[in-house]
Length: 225
Figure (tube, one colour):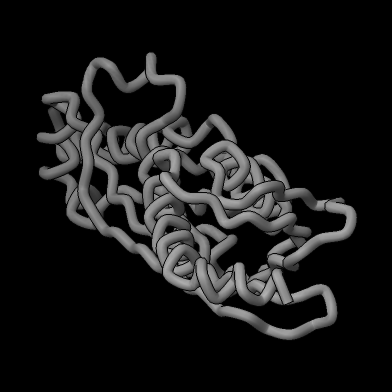
């Protein structure tokens, strides 16, 4: 094989890697929580206000031609603020954090609001995979590696209906890892990169929930006044 045809073959392999990267997140990302049920409940009716999205705009754009932002407009299932708020409401309700929790709660005891400081996941092909002979070796053995990086940083506040701030709670989780796909990859109902970002989301919200339970008595006392 001439050096020109070899170079063309290697370029094709690198291109295939890019196609596989895009295919890896063909299913739109949906923020989802999966927390364990709680042993205690804060006996309060809570009105939920949408979390404000203050995450960096660049997080919603692909960092390069060899990467894909999971929270980009073409990669996520909808508006980030709405999806994150909905996931928190659903999981807090399912795990019994509060007595009731709704976005249209009547006569609430508490108001839950907050800020998304950061919520992003990036899937990319590692830079070393773009080295021709490394790309050739990886694809020859059908090991299309991916690099996953992400961070979730959320802040949630609880206030009384008249505006008195009772508590501010913050949770953060991040990750950076190199992963490969096995023969089970394409049959999974939720692609691993999405599941990894949701695990970081869960870790951050679990921190917030634990902090809230640390203030449980204070919150109950404020409700009863």
